[in-house]
Length: 159
Image (tube, rainbow, N blue to C red; front, side, top):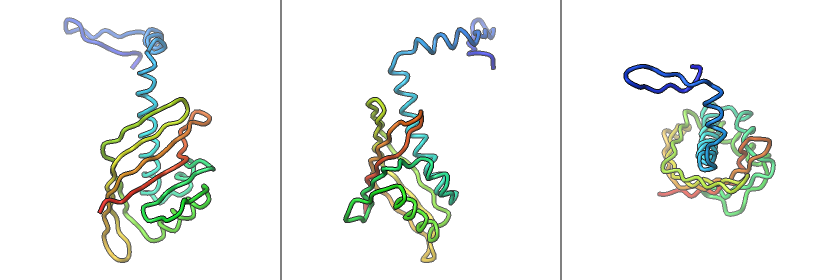
C-alpha cells in the first residue's frame, strides 16, 4: 500500500507516503515509547521462539555479553553470556516441545535501558513426562546498535 488510507463518503482516499512519513516525524515521544515498548516485548518473544525451536545460536543474538540472572532455583547470581548459553544448551538436551506464554507485561523505558515485568506460563516434555510451570519475572534490556539485548533476568516460580 502506498500510504495510509481512510474512508470518506464511501470513497477510499490514499495519503502520499511522503505525507505519512512527515506525520510520523511529528509523532510525540510517547508514540516512540510505545514502539520501543513493543520492541522489548517482541524481543523477549523472539528469545522464547528461539528456545522453542531449539536454536541456541539465534537465542544468543539477544543476550548481552554482560548478562546476569537470578534463576528460579539459583542460590547465587549467574554471570556471563557464556554461562547462560551453556545452561540453555543443557536445558535443550533435556526439554522438548517447550512453549512459553507471557501475561500482563509492563514495560518501562529510560533512554537506552528498558525493563519488563510479566507473569509466565510454560509447558513441555522431558524424559520424565509433561511439565508445566508458572512464575513472575523481570528482565532488563539495553539498547545497543539499535537492538534491545537482554542484560539481566530475575525469575521466580509460583507454586
